[in-house]
Length: 275
Image (cartoon, rainbow, N blue to C red; front, side):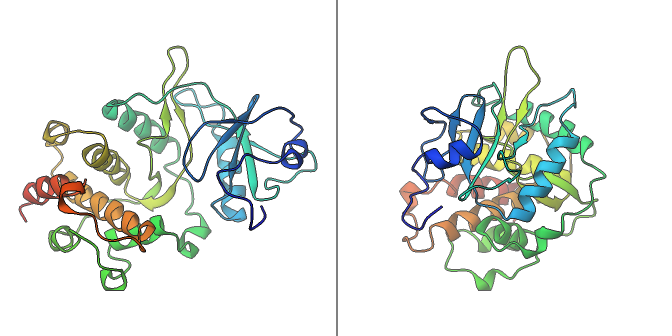
């Protein structure tokens, strides 16, 4: 992709031809990392390394026949490439995002995490320096918060962290908006965001997202009250999202209190862990 080409522009005819497709791309998202559909193909600007793309394609292939969920399959260009002018392609999957189905999303995630429980740690995880990876490392004490720009709310959840003794494995760290439901088919899991963390962290991220962005309240949190460790996963999930959000908004002012989606969830979770 050329420096002058916006990530919100559709893939060029040259990209479509490389993947053996023709037609007018239809947008599937409206953000600056837009995803486009052409027939049975979805094209997306690459925001991950080629190593991660190859790993992802291999994992998707191994999971393609799982009966508990569906995953898109990577599609190579006619000459065998995964990446063409900064774009990669995958199969289109039917389904829809349904608001407030957080327990169902977490349940699908549990099935996925069972399926990948013995996957080796991808080697590229340690090399990543994107905002999501930094947020994850701060949440788990692998990177100091002092290295970050000024970030609202961060001191309070950091002060409540306590140790956790749980097995880490491959997880999907962004399930909330990436599970599609269909009346006839198993749920579809999109946009794999790989981390090597305890699987309950993935569930906690869904709960944190629901509290911050989707109008959930303490009723959702109470559903996990039997798990004594869940508050610690949830506080890490909020740290992860707070740091990531701040790094993407590094050049913007801190949000005003009246326009701050994190204030209420932080109060709730800090009270939950006794901070």
